[in-house]
Every structure is written in structure tokens, then in C-alpha cells.
Amino acid sequence: MSTVLKSPRAARTRPSLPEYTAEDALAGHWTQASSTELRRRLWHMAPGLLPFFLWPVPHEDPLSPTLLGLIAVAGLGLAAGVYFGYNLIRRSELDREQRTAVLGYLCSVLTMIFLFPSAPEMGLAVLAVLAFGDGSATLGGIWLAGPKLPWNRRKTWSGLASFVVVGTAMAATVYWGESNNLENLTPGVSPLTAILCTLPAVMLSAIAESIPSRVNDNIRVGVVSSVMVLCMHTLLIGWPA
Image (cartoon, rainbow, N blue to C red; front, side):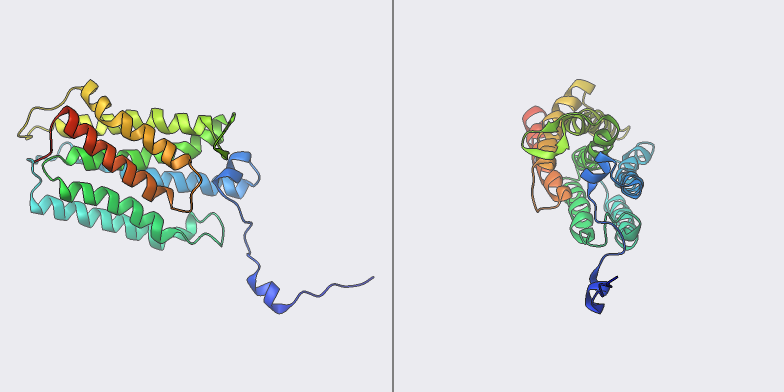
């Protein structure tokens, strides 16, 4: 019986964990992949709860420098937690996207809030799209499975639909709630207007997330949702002065 000896270099460079992606989790290839992906999605969605904690806090528009500072500190704290705890949600040892994933998520939200402090509902709606829309796409694909997308055979129609349904429901709720805060200087929008302001952003973000690309999906979704929320807000309500 012959023995095949592996070089020390090969032993050092071989990953100790199996390589897998979200799509492998969808197919149920590894139990570890599924549990990691679920944990990853929960971390992804958790920041989306922050707007609901802001509702009972009295605040006028535009947001005060103090409140903007608190939002920035909270965002940076969450981002640091995800960055340094990335090993808990890493899909494989070759997954090195924590920097682009965290920055894409954080910068999209904070940029909208700081550029348009008189309409914080826009930035918070972008947060909801990233957290709940993008976060639910993989979970919808895992639980519902079904036919693959024709432009990306590694993603499913059920995942795309989950992104649109959950993302629109949560983004519209966040947008409506923030625009109706008790100290808002302008009249709050109706639920229908909130849906109209967020639905196009969610739909285009869902498509952007599903397209095969080397650009991290947090960056794609963040940019598309920011631009579309701003466009729809300006069209239906006016430029956020």
C-alpha cells in the first residue's frame, strides 16, 4: 500500500472549514452553512430595529447635532461589533468581505441621515431596506426554495419576492413612523405615500442584490435604495430642504 505525502505548504493553506456560500446554504449542503447563514441574517437585520426605538424619543426636524452624534456613535458601535465579531458569521475562511460589507451598510445609512437631517425618514428607510429586505432574501430562499432566477442561477424567485415583500413592509413602516413623529415640523405622510416612496427603491434594490457582481451587495443595495428613496421623496413630497 502506497502512502501519498502532502507538502507542508498544502497543509498550511488548506482551509479548516468547508468553503460555502449563501447559495450552498439554500441547497442545504452543510448544516454548518445553514446555521451560520441564519446567524448572519440575524446580525444583518438587528440594526433595522433602531428606528423603532427612536419613535418615542421627542425630536424635531432637522435633527439636532446632539441626536446626529448619538446616531453616529450607535452606528459606529454596531459596525465595530460586526467587524470584530465577523468570525461568527464568516461563510468560509476565504470570506474576507467584512470591511466592504460593514462600510457599505454603515456609509449608506449615515450619509443619507447627515446629508438630509430635515428628512431622517429617508435614511432610516434605507436602513430598513438593507436590514430587512436584503436580510430576508436569503432566508426566503432557504425556507421557500423554488425556481432559480434566469439571470442568476444561484438565487431564487422566492428570495427576490421575500426581499420585495418584507423590505417594502418594513421600509414603508419606518418611513411613515418617522415622518409622523410628534415634533415633526411638517405634516406626516399617509401609509400609501410611504409605500409609494419606498416600493420602487425596494424593487430596484432587490434586482441589484440578485445580479451577479464582485461588488458587495450591501454597497449595491445601499446606493440604489438611497438614490431611489431620494428621487421618490422629491417627486411626491419635495426636495428635503
